[in-house]
Length: 261
Ligand SMILES: O=C(CO)COP(=O)(O)O
Image 1 (cartoon, rainbow, N blue to C red):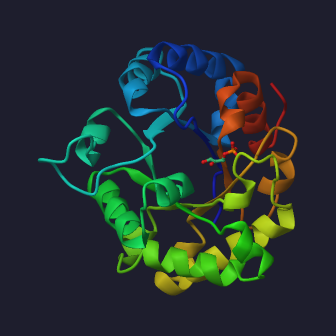
Image 2: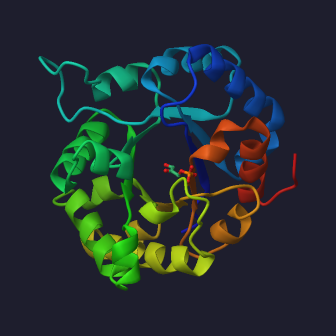
C-alpha cells in the first residue's frame, strides 16, 4: 500500500501564540500547494498556541494540519492541568503525540498510560502519533529491536485491527533526540521494519502496510532525504529543525520528493 509521507514538527515547549502564528505563516508561504499532494505536513505547538494556529489555518485555508503534544487519558472532570481529547478535536486538531520519550522519562508515563492516551485520542477522532524508542544503554547492548517491539506491544495492547490502522508510530531513539546524533538510515530502517512486522502481528499484514512509521531524532534538511528514502520509514517527527521555517519547509519538500522551494 502506498503510504504518503508525514512530516510532523514537534515544537515542544517553544513559541508563544504570536510566535506560532508567525512561524506557521512563514512555513505556509515557503511551501506552495503542489507539495501537499505528496507529503502531509503538520505542526505540533504547545496547547496555548493551538487556537491561534486554528484561526490562521482555517482563515487562510492552509493545507498544513496541526495537533497537540499530549492528551489526557480522561474524558473530563477533576484533573487539574489536563486537556481532553474532545477539547483538542473541537480545536480542529488532526494529530496528538502520545508517549514522547520526554513524557515517558520526565513525567513517568508508562505503556499503560500511553495506551490509555492512545485510546482517548482515537475515541475523539484524533490520530495518535505513538512514540517509542530506546535509550543509549539498550542500543549499546544490542537489544534495541526487542525493546522497541515490546514498547510498541505495550502501547497498543488490545487495540482492534481497525484502531491499529488509524495510528501513526514514531520511532525516536532517545540518544538521538536533541543531541545532533542522528541514527543512520540503516538503524532507522531496522527498527521501523520491526515495528511494521509487529503491527502485522497485532492487526494484519494488510493493516501494517498502510500504517505510517516515522523516524525522529536530530532530523534536519541534510539528513531527511536518506532517512525517508528507507522502505519502512514514512516521514519524520522533527524537533529543533521544525522551529525554523525555511529548514522545515525544505525538509518537507525533500520528503515530498522535491523540488526544493
Ligand atoms: O523529539 C523529537 C521530536 O519529537 C526530536 O527532537 P530533535 O529533532 O530536536 O532531535
